[in-house]
Length: 350
Image (cartoon, rainbow, N blue to C red; front, side, top):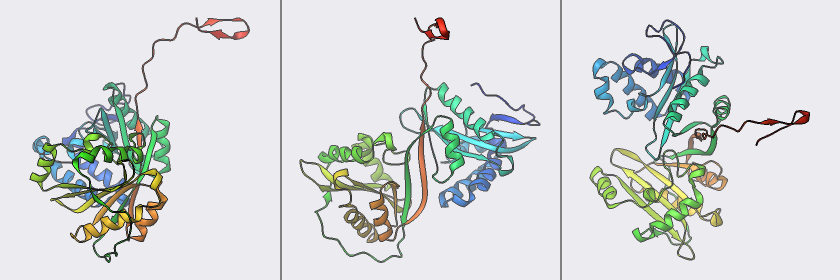
């Protein structure tokens, strides 16, 4: 990896080095908490506590880290050191699909910003990913203009912006709405569900959401996957509104887990029917899950004003709005042919 400014083992100078979990885990936890405190949710605060606990295990951090949902995402990152103090971090971890890698926890202490540290951390991460011929994905607060500018300057492009909406249990149960009949999607109809998802959540625009590409496997679970979810107490229900020509005009994907009270919901509406079915789908999801004492969380594209209005109508509140971005390594090209000079300073390629 071509990375400049690497710090010596003594960490007495300034520069970049790879993460060393036994030395850095507690400092990374402190840095992330200071930099992201306003946006940390319950899971983020839990992750920081877990990092601090593991940092006190000494040599066991490598063993216990394998059982953690947090530490594996920190092992391949980089930190920035200033006179022995950790002031910057970037984490790199496999995305879990295709050849993608996640870049996360890009943080620099406020007193050390505007010095190019974040850019050098990001460049080191991208160099590492490029060596593996992979692509990178990240998500950033939609209103974080400096970070968005940095990522775009490094070659990232926006996929889509998603808002996470939450509805608690303390709201009244809405009355049912009249409309087209809704029924469970049968296994032989999963290809129709996949076609609907492709039309509303194509992968070139972020897929179903963060780390959820739109693939046949995501919408056509295998028998093994279904059995695994049953053994772990998890479940995915598919509800659809039939349309013409054996299509689905709308659908709900509802995931519930034994270890999580909250239900995760996707609301899909065929582009030709947008503005007509959102209220019916959200009404149905709200009634179905409220009757089962399940709060709802919906990750939905922020560029869908109709759905946004319906979410507010049904007492959902926005939690975070994140822009998903993608970076692909530059393609290797053959060495250009030698240019032949012409008169008047012009050139052409032979």
